[in-house]
Length: 239
Image (cartoon, rainbow, N blue to C red; front, side, top):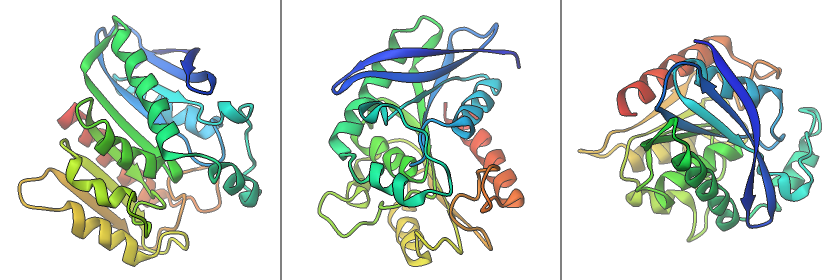
């Protein structure tokens, strides 16, 4: 599907937040999906994912959560620097950024305002889970890729808010992820896969952290392909 792309500036709590927005041509109004970046910034991979989502018929918007730091792009090889930035992020501030993105999409005449989903990777996977709980009335479907910190040992950990998630959420993990031990992935699975809830978890054998990113050594083609097909089916079904 043909798409058109642009960068929009959104007024957020800590300044002007850029968002990479892609729109399918000839389909209006369309459901929308917010794409939440990894710890490396709003880089070419996240923009590519945003474009791929739009080609499936959704308005896709990827907010730059590092706008408060000057919008840096961190090389994949410099993980300590990426961690340094993500450790400065506060959950309440990011949920405010998500709220700004939701409000922006709802205002657009080419968006079906009652059909907004969210997906994210790494730290974005955690924020996706959190947004599904905190913005449960607005987020109608969610897909979380290897979300670190979901099961953190803290009262405000996202896992403790799972009961607030009203709409379907799908979570992907890698069996060999050194940042998210298999026990944490299984805890998410045990928590959200309840009778009567359209929630699901997929743990990929042999896959590690970042398995979906084809720009990293951790890329796992088979897991990435399957996860993408499941993601498309999830949004097609629930949005």
